[in-house]
Image 1 (spheres, rainbow, N blue to C red):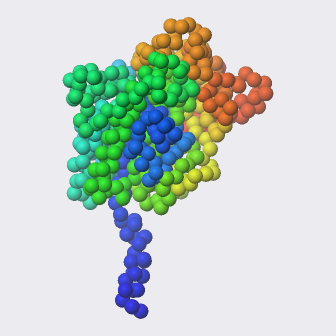
Image 2: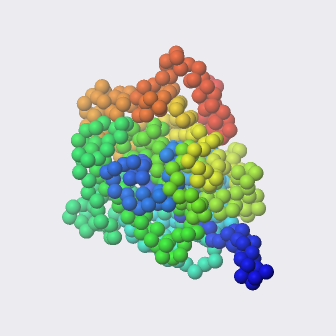
Image 3: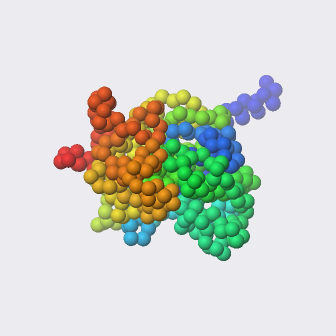
Length: 498
């Protein structure tokens, strides 16, 4: 046999070993309050060339959902793989809101650290305690300046290390107000966009949108006020896109792009009443773009229904730390995790290594999937005064919402109550239209809301009281109860006495 043929055979034999030895880096890029508003999601107005390129080079999920449309609570789900009723992070962590995860919950960066990864976070954190979500390194923001954020991550990405890395980078865009804007000489507007007389954000070319051109989703009122707010929101989304592009450029320059799993999501939908803090589609439905460097098939648009409980197990799977039989973290890694100090508050049944979700790595190259046809949601708080627990089962066609505290009026986040779009309609009176609802029906909700999303995509017609759908309602309630039992939901007890 010729020597060249022998070398070829040896190399072919070694391919599996070489592939296994390749670095398996992970970047999880999370924006703040973004709906699936991007060119790749069919929005012909907003300019997002880097998101669109990422979609063409990876997989776009058409049915990706947060499980709770509240910043802290959603991030706790992303970083734990557990619904927030089980991890204990019911609402906002910061200030007097006080919520945090149970101390025996183990966060994603801890698992990856035990699996041999170096970990870093940059930007918005918003979870606690740090012992649960501990990263090796904190990279400074500012969180409203995404190109600067990307540049600040360059040293970590290009570090001369034999270890693979996990980078968790989170913007404050396109969240209303707040965030870090210290590099601006003047106060930015309500979607974080720079004041007209400021120098703007370094490395960003602001994209300004005409309100008459924007696309108003059906869950919002098509008014001049709403259009003006959406135009500002689009501007913030385009700024994120430029930071995304810069981060990918840095990964490419460092020679890391071809061995990095890149996941782009938002914590939940747009910061407008009708979306954020609700479990309507506007709140739950979020962008999800995933590029697995080892997939041959690119530009996939998949119908798999996933939610944020699936993010952590997917990353752990990519890192080779997932037990394929149990779908949880390998026990040899779990055993390395420190146990909480005696006397600290812990969960009843959730054990270290457990996930509620599952890895979606196997379906990244599949357009039509089987067994990925349902998503669940579990919302309890946003701010401390906003107790309004809701549970959801969302299937392909039908969706059931259980408003557990339905005798109460729906509570508003402080920023959403002040939103000009809401205030304009609220001042018109209770019968004023708000998307497919009215001001009154938005604020006062029934115990059950059942929607046919095929016929009523913006959830305006509640079928729960329709005798024709009584059997369907019972079936959906049974599925909801099963979900609560399986995930040890404390609110399960409400069925027993109300």
